[in-house]
Length: 133
Image: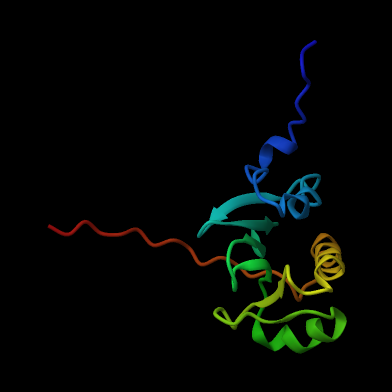
């Protein structure tokens, strides 16, 4: 019997990650774009970078919420477990080791899908490297 593949599932190449279940929530969104970023999985919605899912060693072991620092306090108040990332302080983070990880991730995912304006940053345009001789 031939196996029928879900075309939406093919949009994510992160099935090898233990955190792939997080990305599945976005697969029905027509504007969802998945990209690999520094060995992690990046979630773009409507062209904005919203989330980075990292399944590596600390401090790259959890979910990074892409936002501006002026929105940190409100998001931290709304989602227990969020804190500024220890390396990328401009973004918020919840580690897989945090007891609130799954609840926090579910809340973050819901906010992204609801288009909460506090989450998401416009990516900077890539500059082309000039060839030096």
